[in-house]
Image (cartoon, rainbow, N blue to C red; front, side, top):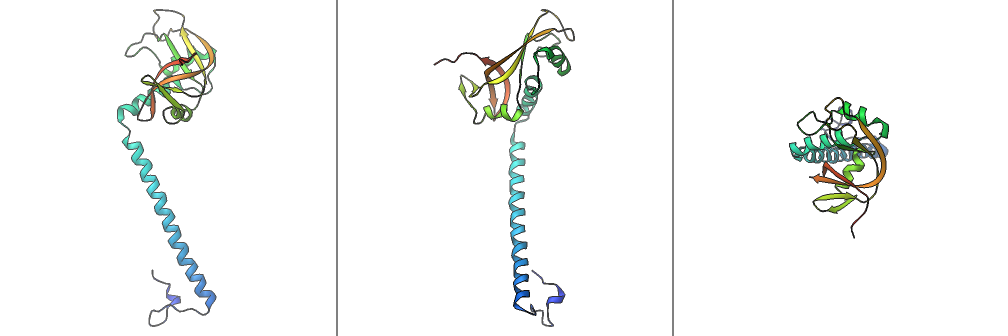
Length: 182
C-alpha cells in the first residue's frame, strides 16, 4: 500500500513526526483492511443468495407465483370472495369455468413458505403446517357459471393446511385439515 507523498522522505521511506502519528497511520491501514474484509464477506453472501435464486427451476418459480396469486391474501374477508377471485382471474385450469372452491390463506408468503422448510411435517406426498392458519374458503354458489359471473360464499376458519412443496417452495394448495390421523 502506498503512503501519501506528504509522508515520505526523499528515499520513499515512511516518515513520521511522532509515535502518535505512526499509531494513527497504523490504525488507518488496519481499518482499511478490515473494511475490505467485510466488503468481501458481503459480496460472497450476495453471490450465494443469487446462486440460490438462480438455481430455482423456472417451472417451480412459475408455479410458486401462481400459488401466491391464487392462495395468499393477508387481509381477506369472507365477503370478498367474488371480487378477489374475479380480480385475480382464478378459474378452472385452462378454461373460463368457475373454480368450485378456492382457499385464501391469511398470512405472508414468508410464513407459508416456512411450512416447506421448518414449520411443516410430511403428510403423504404433501406437507402439513405445524400451526393453524386463518383461512377463507370460497365455495361456488352458482354451478355451471363462467367467468366473470362466478358467485361465491366465503367462510372463515382456523385450520392447519396441507400444501405441495417443490425445492422449498409451496406450489399447490391441497386442503385444510380439521382432524389429524394418529
